[in-house]
Length: 110
Image: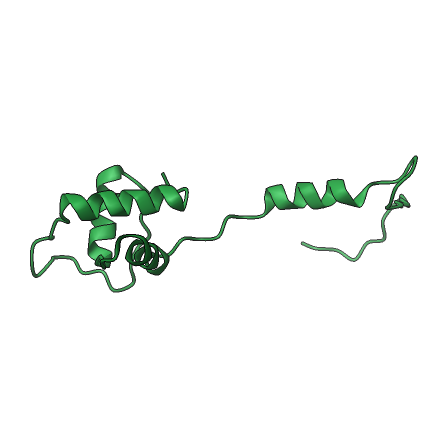
């Protein structure tokens, strides 16, 4: 259970930010905070746009998923996933596979 008991002791800490002796520099805090910042989540839409801009053709999201599956990359559960596929999975051409792998490298997924 939680209680509303008063603490036995209190420690007061005074921290001064800025330049000089005994002060915590703000630049170091910003650098450390940047290191903890999570990377932006790359979407299939971003991958498709990159491929279309660089290679001039469109790829289907199923092709991206197939390449990720083939490479053993983590996949997220789709809310609209079905137990059994109505049609067998279509495999991308070698050209499209290379374009997708290039996009995955560009976004630092592989």
